[in-house]
Image 1 (cartoon, rainbow, N blue to C red):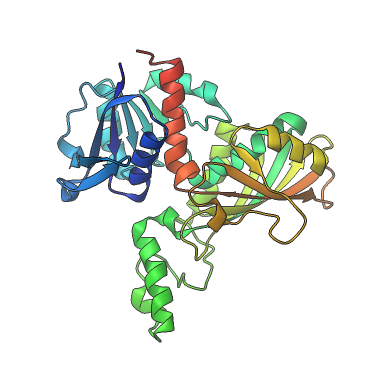
Image 2: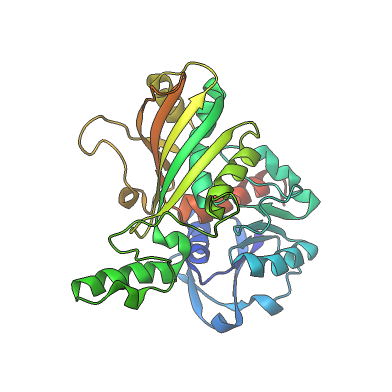
Length: 341
C-alpha cells in the first residue's frame, strides 16, 4: 500500500522539479495531487513520462487522507496552508523560508542530520533549508567529522532560477535585448540592477547589520543543521546563469587537515562527487551540475592564511539538490523510518 502525496506550488520551478523527482525515484505513492493558486486551477503538469495531473486549488483543497505534502508555494502562502495540512494529519515537507528557524520544526539535509526528522511529530512540519545552505553543509559534514570546523567564509555565485521563472526570463530578455541595442533597464523588473553580463551582490532584503537575508540564512541554517559553534560569514551574489549555484568556501579547522585527507573524506561522503584535477577542465561548473543530483566539490587546496585552513569550490543544481531533491529525500527517510504502511 502506497502513500497519498500532494505537491503544493506544483506549477513553479521547484514544484515541477518535485513532481519529476518523485516519479524518477519511484516514490511509493498510490496517488499524487498537484496544487497551486486559483490562477492555475485546471492547468496540466507532468508527473513522470506518461502521467498528466490537473492542478487543483490549494486554498480550498481538503488535506484529509493525504500522508505527505511537499510544499513550495512561497513563504506567505505556506504560512497558511502548511499548518492546515498538518492539522489534517499530513506530514509537510516545506521548502519555503517560513518555518526554517522555528525551534520546534526540524531543518533537515538527509546526508547531514537525518536524525532530526524525528522532530516532525511536534508540528507535523519538516523544513527544507535554503538552496545555498544545502549544498554547503553536504560538503562540510564529512570535513567537520574529520577535523572539526571553527569558521567558514563563503562567497556564493547563485543562478537566476533561485529567484524564480520571472528572474530567468529577465536574464534571457536582457541578454537578447543587449544584442539588439535595447537598454537593459527596459527588461529590468525582478532584480535591482542589470543581471545580463553582470553580477549583483544583493540577494533578498538588507538587514540592520549590512548583511542580506540570504547571507543570514546561510549563517543561521548552518548552525542549526550542522553545529551551533561554527562561525559563518557569507557574501551572496546573483550571477547571469540559469541553473546551478557555485560557492567558494574557505574553512578554518580546530585540528590539522591536509587537502588529501579532505579529498578522501569527501569521496566517501554520501551525496558528494569530487572532481578535482589541477588541470584544464578539472573542476565542475554550474552548467555541468544542472540536472545532476550530486553536490560537486573541486579546487580543494590548503589555505595558508590560517593555521588549519582549506579552500574549495562547491557546485550543485539549486532546483534539484538545493530544493526538490532534498525534499523528496526527506520524504524517503520519512516513509522508510517513520510512516511505514
